[in-house]
Each structure stands twice: as C-alpha cells, then as structure tokens.
Image (cartoon, rainbow, N blue to C red):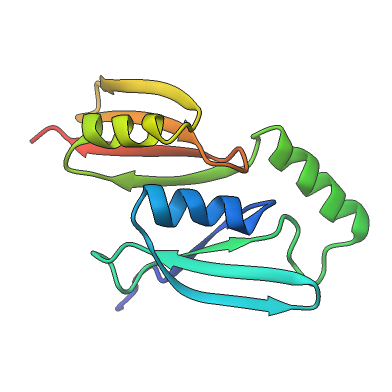
Length: 137
C-alpha cells in the first residue's frame, strides 16, 4: 500500500496573525487561500515538503458542527487546549531564537530528550502548541 500524509489541520482564530507566524517567521509558503461562507482556509507548507500541507482553518469549521460545538472549539482554542504539530529542524537553537525574537510565547527552551531528540516548544498566535525537534544523530 502506498500511503502518505497530505494535509493536517490547525485551528486558528485570526488568519492574518497565523500567516505572520507560519509564513513570515517559520518560512512556510502559502499554497492556497480560500474564502467560503464567511470562513477562510489558508494552506501553508514547507518548501522542503511540497507534498505536505497544513490547513489553517477556523475552529469548528466542520459543516456538521453546531453553533454550540463551534463555540466550544473556540473556547478550547483560546485556552491552548487544541493540539498543534511537530516540525523537524536541523538547528533547534537557531529556530528557537528566531521565534523568540519575533515575540512568540516560548513554552520550552531547547533541551535534549531521553528519546534521542533535542526540542523546544512554542505557542502560535492562536495558542496551539508547536514542537520543533532536532535529531541527535
């Protein structure tokens, strides 16, 4: 079976702030920016991975989500309770410094983990936790 990851989704409450982070700070490219029914989806990805995309979507963007569900998702996002993604990097310290210099919330300084990586963690503008790992080869 030929199976690959194509897209993952991250809830954001302000696409312009999210783009300032994912595009301007992390260096991701915008691949799509779509508005539909008073919502917006922006797809970004690393130039190093043309087949993998992150869709920045409104909280509770599912067409089946009730207004109460959308409100619950927005509250969880505001608390930082929704999961983000894990990125790899070749220089954890440089990435950490770049993100900190841009003014984003540091959750964990770069540190060696017992499972063979060095990593750090930040919150994006919406409050999602993102980890950045460097393999200790």
